[in-house]
Amino acid sequence: MSSSTGSSVVGVIAAAGRATRLAPLPCSKELMPIGVHREPAELRGRPKVVSQYLLERMRAGGARRIFFVVRSGKFDIAEYYGDGSRLGLSIAYLMMNEPWGPPFSAARATPVRRGRDQCCSDFRTS
Image (cartoon, rainbow, N blue to C red):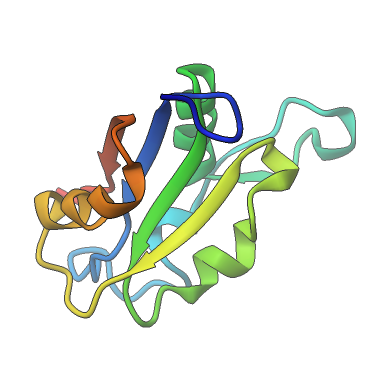
């Protein structure tokens, strides 16, 4: 089965954790800058956030539809990425009440996967 974007791979990013071992942070840990853009030229040298590396890898692996599983207080991720179009992706956000861990976060995406292959990642802080 193919998605409307032509890919049968769906990416799921578990991003609902509280990052208590890294706290206090000025933003969600997924948006911490850890490198710089090399391309395109207009972004060269500007900070690149950690989750963008993951999104680029998922895109290279065939995923065009990505789901961030987030909780209240993590809305800065949606504000940063929006619908994903600037990265050539379709990004959606799934809300959960409590961060119960990566397996629960991945399971949260089950109703929207509709039989597609799923690649998952979480942002572990230890």
